[in-house]
Image 1 (tube, rainbow, N blue to C red):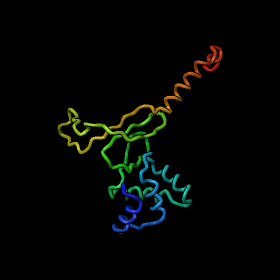
Image 2 (tube, helix red, strand yellow):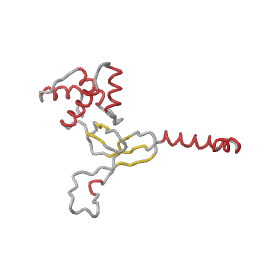
Image 3 (spheres, rainbow, N blue to C red):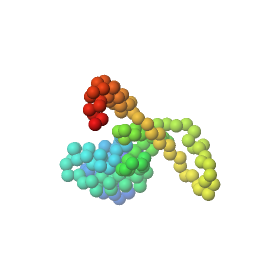
Image 4 (cartoon, one colour):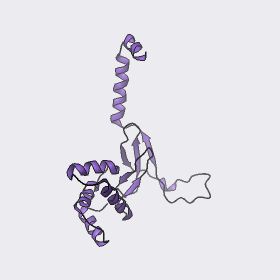
Length: 159
């Protein structure tokens, strides 16, 4: 994704309306590696500029995608995420907290699915699913806490 200043110039050159709200969104998306949803970006923008509308957020994100400045990510499970990283990369997703991170995988362009000869592949996207270290530690702590209870406490809980 271009810098916020470059995006402002690109917006103007395409005859698009440049507003302070859009400029804020350019800043919030530039270098953003959190893969935000429109709603989470709206919450962050509202904290800095009360009164910005969710519609403006969606419209700006769609326009940035049309301009080739960010991509939509659909990893299943609900809301579309937005990614300003246009480099060749893939994603890893925590199944507990939903955190998404960029990962680089060598050789994905050579992947050839079997049994779909009547289908043309345009792009290959890989999504790894697992548990992040924070959630893994939380799981381990919960597991230890459950085992630390006396048999009487555990019996009481299971009733």
